[in-house]
Length: 449
Image (tube, rainbow, N blue to C red; front, side):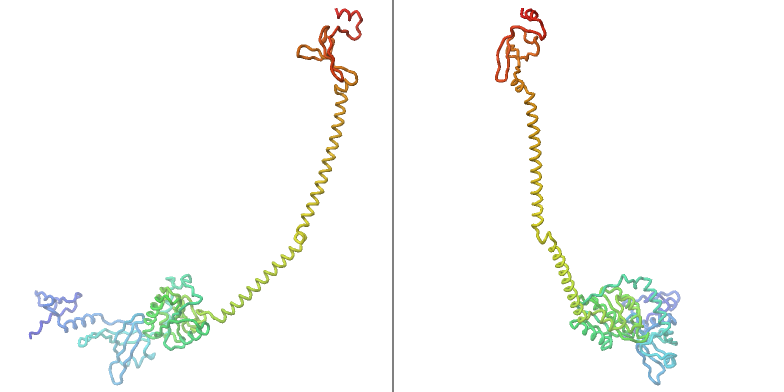
């Protein structure tokens, strides 16, 4: 078979698949890459190796998850893992870098390495060849934690207003902790002693080391999606600063804030204070304290119920006694002891007033009757009937249907028809003539004529 034609090298160009002009004779165009003119594996491997070689030496930070140091070998193999993501990188170095490290290096140690990436064309693998390894000290770790703490605080992730209330009696409690750990045992024992019917949904994860953050993030997401879980407890026993580093991871802190389920952080002991304590909805000093603060004490609650029932009964009895005394006092009052007494007293008063009114009215009537009688007697005495009875008479001149009282002699000239009323009747007469008082007889005769 005819060996495929090897395309010219493309080292130094940014666009893969196109040959570099310096590898071609002057004035000739590079052949295009296609299905008819493919690159052989060796060309691709060489190009990748050359591209990676252009990166140069770099500093890389990570956590050692595996150390392979065999006696008699000139190369030590390590696996360096990212602390916040599930990504790793193969590392090779001189064994003396590990043996002579000022701080013993072991799996889980955080380091900063300096080296150059190499692509092995024979196996198609990538490795970082390092010439310097610097263990990350406690002081530097604490400084990084403080910088992350300041960043999260500036974003308001520690704001108490973001804290969600813990339910009084959660139906199911999510628990993220190490497998068969003392923290798990403490939480379960204390919680079940306090409330035997409590239910747990447990997720056992790594709580230290390079895989701890990713496992806890996955467990947290699972429990947060479970509608039956009403609170999640993140628990771990005590440990060194390096051991508790996963609980100060930025990804975990942001996941705690973003969760919809209330989260309790129970990491280490009282002096330990990872960043998860600050972003969680409730911080517990220890896993045991978390169980006490999440699960109510059945005995204490029953005692509280009994006490409240006793206090309520005592309060009710006291109220009934006070109302009974008040009712007794009301009933002992005269108006309630003899309700008709006031009515009788009012009736007697009304009768007395009626009698007084009657007497007053009778006295008034008698007085007025007497006055009326006196007036009547006076009127009778001065009236025309009494005058007529004494011998007087009323003389009226009759002129047709009209009658005029005769007051002077001019009112009754001679020949006038007269009506004379006396005490017991009236007399009809005619005027024969008139005579003035004190007149001589001849005057009278003159008037008649």
